[in-house]
Image (cartoon, rainbow, N blue to C red; front, side):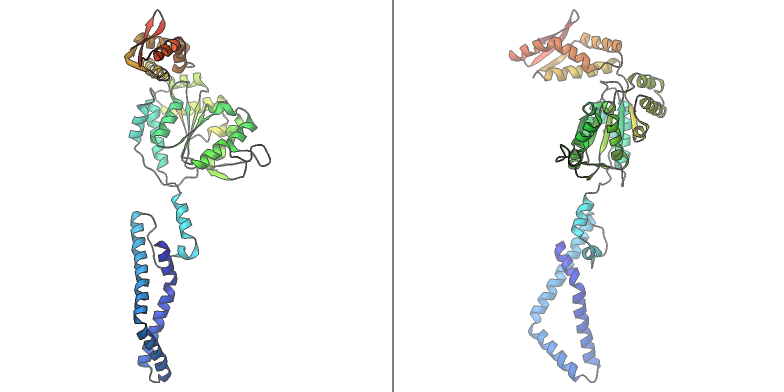
Length: 415
């Protein structure tokens, strides 16, 4: 229909010109006295029109049907918001450019998105234990940044800092799931060498090995430009790798080395996790527990002293400091880790199947080891003593087990 409308509007001037000529001829025929020659012309025109009246009528009806159909089609499209309302006759876009290609490119532009920050925060807090303040702040930041109509930078570059095992990586995964975005997870410990790491992420220049394929990051962003990019343990990547991300965070694109193509990052969310300056951040979180702004300022300074370059820290939109887990929060995380571990053997935990003494022991050990320990490390120690029992329970057809503490040891009892 749009094609027919374009054709009709293109030939509309010709149709109007013909109609104008006929009208002028009729006027002259009726009002000019000496009209012998004109009478012949008009008689010929009248004879032709009379003999082909039905054909001319059908052509005229068809032409105006197409014009009006296109007019109402554009009105309907404008009402839906597909196209901008405006002049439908002789649209400049139809004459001066490829309108369809323009509309397709316009449809690919990011649209502002409004989310419910409270709903997002509640969903995150229900999954990430002991970090309610971080979840609230992150949800508010995401809501404001998604609502921006025009951006030349990523939606956000957020750093999640704090002790291991406090939920930093898990929060990034939960955010991607809640926003229904693809998660691109990069373990930055694999990119500790400058040149080789950059090649893996951003591709190899022409003439070098691997230049026939895109880098891991550039290929992923090319295919899923609205992804959540998780750079896990960013402090372990080579400093040159950090600097390679500056254009992605500041200018809104990364350059693929193999062909020089710029891959947009304006629709992506970057989440950086770090375990750097753990002890310092732990002390700062206690000192500035009631002053979030001062905590972020002090944390920025602490991370800078831990080795992050100033130009990298200046590109971070927000630093979220994770608190060390205490008390029941340690027990909750440990219980969930135990459940996950047991399910990996094809078994389930019986109702109230974890002896409280086991969790108390984990809390005490966590407090003794300090912020450097994580609940996952404690659960791995328990798994070593349970593995044989869990395998036997599975082989004998049991589906559930309960864990009990006997003389300081953890024993699995099939149910």
